[in-house]
Image (cartoon, rainbow, N blue to C red; front, side, top):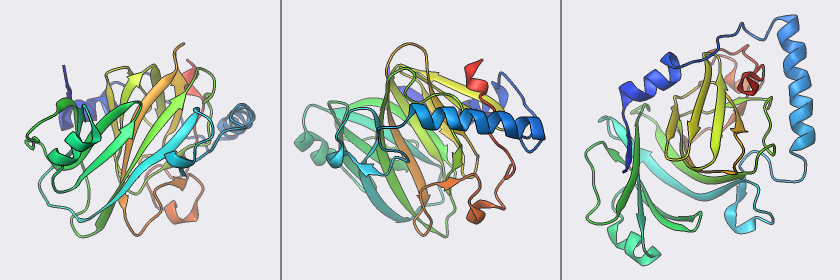
Length: 253
């Protein structure tokens, strides 16, 4: 059955189903712990592209996070928007069903139609996989949809990464394996067939979880005039929520 993620459910994921609450990592103990975890992460991730900035057409190994499409959407409507995910037997079939703010993507051996639209939007054809939202965005700024795919075997994206944030919401659909997000409010876990949504500005650190290779499709819906992602210590994000937060490796627990 398709996964339909709505606002109340996703807010519960983000703020209600947190399994651990931690102090701000600006404390000396927190800073030392996060630095050690970051060094461990850097060592284990050497050898594959970082930052999800490599186009999928340029990948040389399977492991990593790669851009599958970038679509300029312009000013978005004020109605609550969702990320609709549909699959098709061929790229041509997906292109035929594509409408406004739709993008056809080939990822994980499937032909996808990704569309940013109102909750009730439906294409004429296609198999619904998931609908994730609402995607909270400004109505006076242009946005860009950056679509990605990620493949991480167990241990290749270890707990304790440096963390980052986005000038817009980020969403995931997990096809296989599991992932864990550490945020200032605790951790959010998702397994195959599940979705996750993080709002604009929320800092996070992502890692694989479990014993199976994690395969996801990802959306960053970001303000077009800003980078898709900021490091936690980037001065351009100094006024963002939880600006002093650092991950403590809670996904290890």
